Length: 276
Length: 255
Image 1 (cartoon, each protein chain N blue to C red):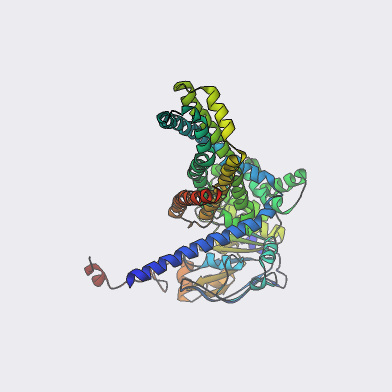
Image 2: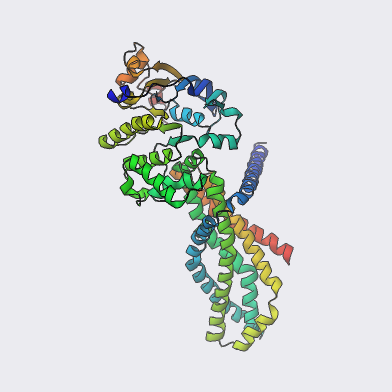
């Protein structure tokens, strides 16, 4: 894809480094030994079927959850050694786009984007306005500055949240399922924005998604998460050409295969007979 | 044996819940200084919890005062001392009914709104988004709402008592024919600063408790529709029971 070819060469160094990451909740293992490297200034896709722990992995990368075992380094800093203040300082250099945008419902579009600036800086109102309008212009929603979140469509809300995520000029931008529930036009807009913002602002982007076609078109590097582990990693083409049955099933969207169509269940006759 | 085990587990759960409340209260109090430089946020919450509850408080105050006027007149007439109606109404309202009924109404109107709002913020990832923007939700969302309730409650209780006294006067003096001179002068002579202070202390304590319970239930709501609904219900039920319990304790201490 031409957009991908235009991406700048990633300099040496890792923005995120994950080693032997384990996470379990209520005795149920979600992640079982994840290793992940995210190169600076690249777009890295984390793919996988629903319920494999993609969002959990993101929450571990951002310090919202503490791992059961293993190490997460962001920007060279080990998250487990950071205090809450240190974690907050690190998060000022990160932006995150939540699945449904997570806009603050009591503020309008302009104030939502201005929120991090008002909380962390003492910019004069004129300069703050300039910064906010610039970011809204970048996502094509400068004209919607006075709308409330309730008046926005799903795609618009996602774009406003994106403007808010980049307003502090982060170095790492994380997208959690950015394409869910979007119409084809909004999806195309968000897809283009991910690549354009990454290249124009020199960011590192991590995109969690299960929309294979969309994400492989925009990512430099893809990882496939399944069964709590990363079972394949590499450039999108390498994943598409993979001869692993599990990877093939996911990439081609086959309903049955190594990932079974049916949720584990007892024998049908036994279950049917056990009427109380 | 089973009963003993169940009782032990229940006692353990209660102690754990009380401990969680105490820890949360400490965290909120520790975050108060950080929220003070932003008085605008607190004033907005005084408006949300206080000004928007005014109509229900004033109406309820009027009706409670009117009932007090009727019942008080009927009772005092039996002893031939209906001129004391002003004193009886004022003391009942200032010391007891004002703080308690206002707190119950506050828990029903403002407390449920707080719990539902914060619970929905949790369910729609708004609190997580704040955390990701390096903004402490406790300082930005919880403390202003707690302080707003703490400030609004005594003001609402004072308004309730004043309107209540007016309602009692309306019935006692205007309808039943109690002498207005006796009504007001006896009230002025009998009501002391200590009585007013007792009501003020009670309403401040109830305000702190109701606000804390509402923000705690909202903040710890399960991020589902059912979770938010349950948090809202729990907020009003726990607040009502605690207000009545603490009212007894405070009355016993201050009498």
